[in-house]
Image (tube, rainbow over all chains, first blue to last red; front, side, top):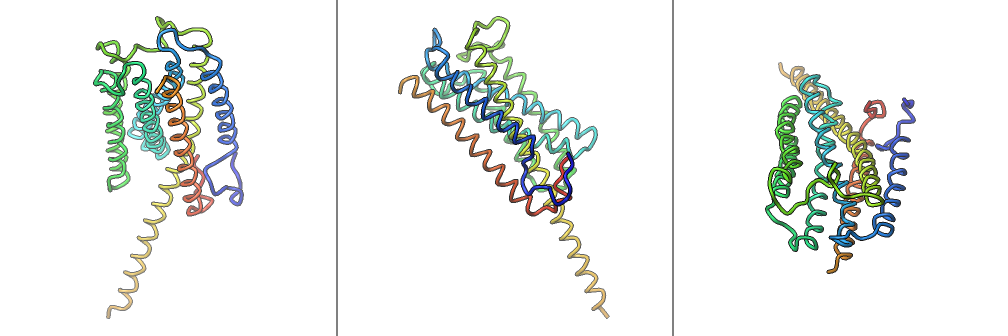
Length: 250
Length: 44
């Protein structure tokens, strides 16, 4: 819905994000009750397995984020669209936050399950590489450069980084290690209330991811507007100086 | 620390980080919005 000039708010919220935010909060409350109180402990891992309702959802959201970053990068390279470039950088940043959370929740889960916070298992190693690759994407993004050069560089880095995503996913099948195989697959044994809670947690995590992505997108758009306005002002000031110098030069 | 201790640490950590990030993004959005004329705030 297009608002009149005077009604455009001085923040990144909208009716849609408010509804999405409220739905996400309600979903979080339901998932917390199910995950911590209603579902029983796992037969093998006991209560430590309740971290699955955290670890898997943030990992799924991370994958969606990096998928969007790649899509945005491809679309920018093809269409040179500012909108898609903004999607790419926003998705990368939010995705990186979720990547960090996946790593940390994995470590917290690993301690009671494996006895260690960290091991150079295939999944953990490729995952930490993924974190570094997308951190690198954001670093490249902030290197001083012309807008088109910046966008092109970061698009190529995003395409390169995404190569690691399927490697991370397949690592538990390709190499033997401590990390368990995919929780949600045709051969997995999770079922009943645990499965329902996990699927709901994934849905809620994706809603939260989307909420953060929309707000981050709008922030990135505003950052570009401020930068453009700053450049325009600097150019106009230089032109004004040049005009004064021309007038004052005999 | 028993299993519930690790579960608590995990859940608290995730929600604190997400909440802090959300606040950071919202505050940044408000600050930037005030610097941009209303006609340029449309992002669609």
